Image 1 (tube, rainbow, N blue to C red):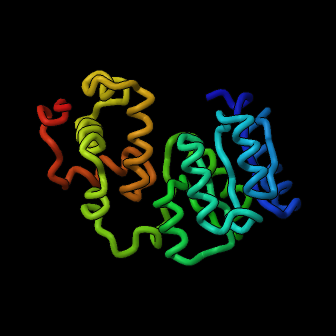
Image 2 (cartoon, rainbow, N blue to C red):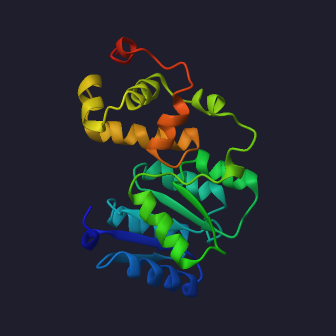
Length: 215
């Protein structure tokens, strides 16, 4: 991904917070384009204009958001745009639910601007940042039980060492579809990277090579 073409939507109802986030990301992503929003309605308008936005940094407490309801609406309307929640809410139940609704990361507003920029970069690289409290009490196997049959097939091929292009060929689907599956798999498993998912999954009863090729 070429940094000069990156586009971000900064959504927070406090102008100073928006400006600080823009400043932090501008230093890390040279030439990036930034849009700003202060309400859920403005976020929706901005994403409708630029549906290929690379990432949204989203506050849960803006007008119109109604907490996590706004996140759910945005995820439904724009399922492929990474959403990084930047919020002062720290309750474990809120964090957990945000990930269940499709957030790629949940960052406390007290985090440093450098840390926020680093997490955004990792999200753009396909990682999911799930803090411990979001998966507290769940075992890896319990989280894996949430995977669909097709996601199990993708995970099994990941464990075998296959990359997205090879997985797409074996499952007769597009590479973009595989990438979307991998993103959801990482989110459901509560892991940060493909490597971590593979390491953890080696202890599971995954489908056999022949089973992964079944429709």
